[in-house]
Amino acid sequence: MSENQERKRVARERLQQERARDKAREKRRRTLIVASAVVGVLGLAAVVGLIAANSGKEDGGATEAGPLLAPSGVQGEEQVAIPVGATDAPSTLTVWEDFRCPACAQFENALRDTIHELEQAGQIKIEYHLATIIDGNMGGSGSLRAANAAACAQDAGKFAPYHDVLYMNQPPEPEDAFADNGRLIELAGKVEGLDTPAFRSCVEEGKHDGWVKKSNDAFQAGGFRGTPTVMLNGESIFPTKGKEQISVANFKKWVKEANENKPPGSERPAAQGADGSASPEASAS
Image (cartoon, rainbow, N blue to C red):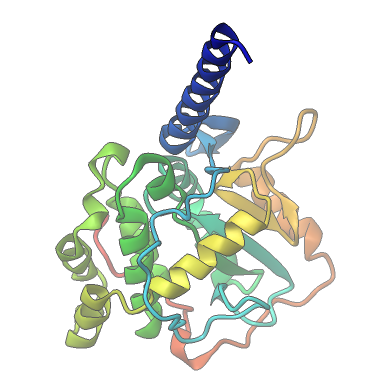
């Protein structure tokens, strides 16, 4: 091979390597809106998007996760579903979320009251799954730290109200304020009976970090497009073109149609209490 050909080969390889690095960097930092739906609440429209999951090899910030210690009461084949509501409810709402995901907060803040209303009436049960894709896309550890804290709240039978508090107090995405365990413990003070030595120790030690990583791995393996991923009885509530748009009225209608001639659920795990811990005695501020 001539010297000129060798220089050309080296130049081509260098260009390919640079392009590969640029592509990897772009994957790590991108946060894309890949779909949207209009949610009507009290006459106001909130735009909800799906934050695209990182499709690279990053595991969402949980690379240093410790031993796999699942929170109490988790369910499902992979043991990564946190259940809320009557176990015999006729319909199941499956939710995949990331506590740093702004689109997840938009969804929660728009549909929260409706979901709680239907859950408390025994019409639906919710299976929450936690992901850490924002950590993987943007860097930081707030998704992991918040998910671990939520798992600690599950141990205390307070997952649902603490979950709501986190979304009502979600920081701007670039700030990664949930990476601070002190902030997560401070927010626990908004849920009656949650801020205990056991909860603090669980948060500070990252007791459930390994389980959070397992949950995020399940999200990545599931082929979901992004967060929030929300399914009613296995069917996405974010419609494809030509289908009804999500709204409070439509969501209630879909549940009513799914539950036709089916009795409401009434059996609840003891840890949830009579109200399923679904009505947080917490401030929204």
